Image (tube, rainbow, N blue to C red):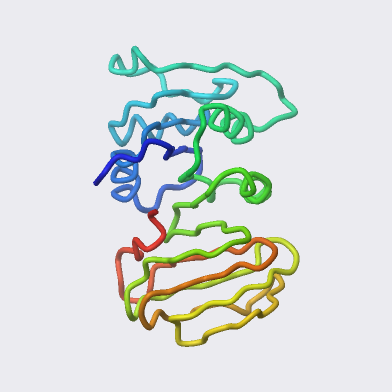
Length: 221
């Protein structure tokens, strides 16, 4: 897998349902960053983080000897989550594309805060959530999505109303308005998928299809 210069993988402390995919993304990305407790995932996957950011209250002990060159950015501000601290660090590093694993699972309040932060940073970064499938948060513009014929995809409004057009799918849309809710679930690719987001933010999702163990890799840019 080719390594991308401006691509970063961020590990949070939630669930990692697809550990193999996380390993592959770590090989692809220029930087591996952990938000405090996400470092425990890095250790269990035998990955060496370039940086760990947060208040350091959930670090694995003892730290692996192979992490001697890891940068530890301590921030004890209790009014800011470790995810938000890590996002600020990544933004300063000049990242353009961010994959986030471990964002969901665990405490419900943490998951809701993490999703809100993801939406907030989407105007600065191209962000993809890695969980039971992949979900890219896309703003205004034209996007070509690498779905193969027959693959499942969903397009959902992320926050407020979103206007979009999509072609190359079983249920095409033309300047349709979506609001947060069920419309946009479970479309199917018929060929090359082209998406135009005219306004708002859209979750483009590649969930794990029934009967399949792995999600589409269409949203690995």
